[in-house]
Length: 139
Image (cartoon, rainbow, N blue to C red; front, side, top):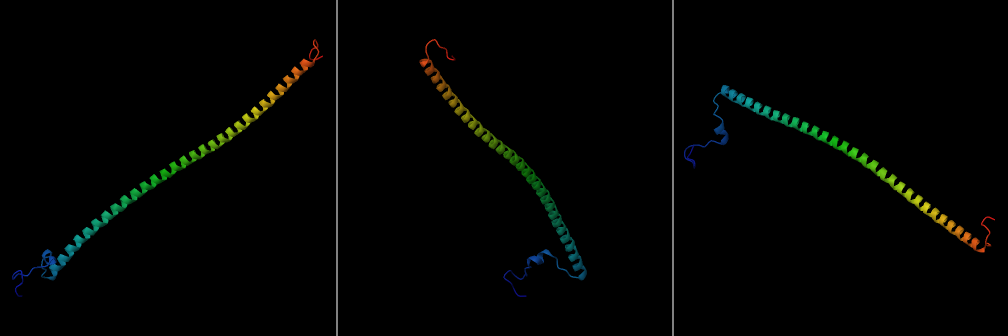
């Protein structure tokens, strides 16, 4: 090898720095199996974290579903209460209309009764004027 810009030493790449140089098949087997167990442990940790997240998500979704169901139940209760109130208002409005109609009819009857009394009073006065003095009303 010739001289390099860094001198006569050859720089190792990043992967060469991390792993020791393997000289025999036995050492290579130990190196690979050691890394495989480390990799397996990492995978197990990741899987466990995934299971925990999934369990937490299921708990949260069941809680949200319970909240939604209770919200729906309260809305249904409010809706039925509102419906009954609206029926009462309609019934009260109908009762008010009936009361006003009866009041109007009573007022009309009172006016007719007043008219009858006025006419009868006028007739009695007219009869009393033209009746001879000393005679009573029914004779």
